[in-house]
Length: 61
Image 1 (cartoon, rainbow, N blue to C red):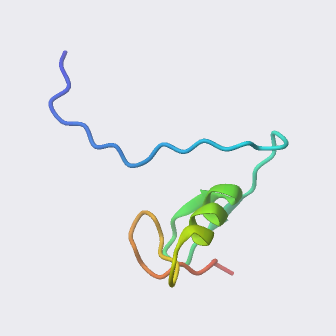
Image 2 (cartoon, rainbow, N blue to C red; image 1 turned 90 degrees about the horizontal axis):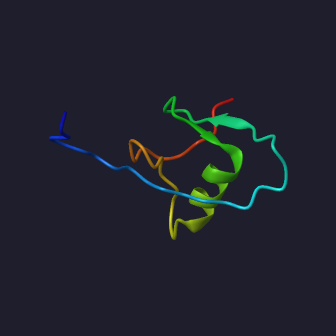
């Protein structure tokens, strides 16, 4: 078997203080770990966008 095509999205590491990590949903229906999406949103220079679909990021209510 050989790999014909491979699409990498991202590789992130973090220093989690505990083993529990909440999952947050965006209005676009993509879900992320709490610390991952907060790091992403805070790194955006202007308006934050979903890292998967690039729609404006809004937390789902």
